Length: 299
Image (tube, rainbow, N blue to C red; front, side):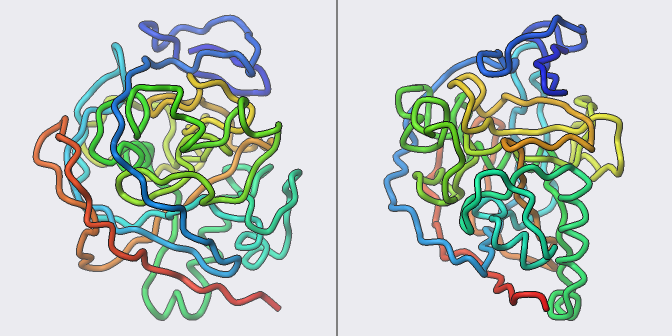
């Protein structure tokens, strides 16, 4: 494990459990390889409503998670719905009655939120009368769910392939962000219609540091160190690769850390094709319209 500064840590390549030296976060290597192949994702970004949250239903499947000495096969055993976008500031404020973000913008991702803040948001959203009546429960994705959805049946370092020169089409990072976050959904989605998995803000996951599971990891509560995935607006290409991740304490908050949510459903029908092997051949997704949750402003 390497300390990256700002209270963040990452796995070191080929040395996953070694404490390393402090290094500059802006040019840190967040433990992963670099590989690419274009996934042919050319659909235009969809407009995002300030008062709605869109979800895609993801089917179960098996994939190879991680890289290097950390690679292992993981099976997602149940379908789940994951946010098409990172949670926006407008959405967060409608549920929490506050907006802690530094880079203000209703449709920008909320940032400067701790893991505890993200968990509280999920709890309050689940307790809204209409959501409670529908039996909907919101939570952070496990790290396996996050990577599975981000990969979208690919096995490359980016969801769109191995050519880091294409990153600017799919995410906000140091070369194109102007040192700030941007409205969600402006970049091209992955093959399953999901936006901003690479760049903009790091995203909280529910997991702590346990990589030995082979099936769905549990959604852990209050672990010592939590995982963030996806890279952020300040990061270099390496930070935004699918396998890249950092660890930090649940109380950590900076203007490059946000989250997206998962919605648990009963007997869902998956939107994405079901992979039949750990390294699928990038099947063409159906990409139906995402399910949309309308949020009413809180009083």
